Length: 253
Image (cartoon, rainbow, N blue to C red):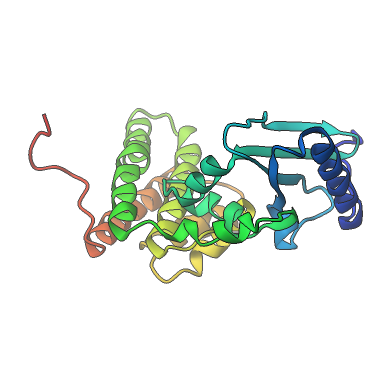
């Protein structure tokens, strides 16, 4: 077995975080407004193989390169942004909102004299219901609708190997919609499905397809296809209940 990725303790991670902070401030201290840790380390859920994820916020006009690299026993991501761009990104609601919002909400500041991260943590919830609904409708067209079309195409054409891929894609896309519908973000990607099941509003068929993948070792293509069809029906009924109509009755052009 290769010795990397390598395990590190929380103490070792924070020692590296402190080293990174000092080097950043020594190199660009006049430009840097804030440095903070997000992800599993900030949440307190980091395991021995978890990476280090840090925000580096600079003054407007002072740009730095985002870096993602492996050094020694550490996988490190330095996500850099200007102040204005960081706050704008924190406020944006898109189809990945439920996956990414936590990076702006739970942050451990290691250098933040202006309390910038405290200002940012409420921004992910500022989008109006109209914006959220529009995002959900557009995403339904871009991903789940197209995924279901691919599932039906491959099933009717006898390409049963695709069904597992399509079903997993459909589950992931549905989880993102569940987060948006409930205005709740997932703490980590690894807990997305678990946390989505605990949310108040979910479509019928979602739990059944998810349970099938979690419980089965031998997958039957007929069963997968049937469960995908049930979830697709549930998704559309759920959209109707939420008052979200994504199909047009007239051409837009």
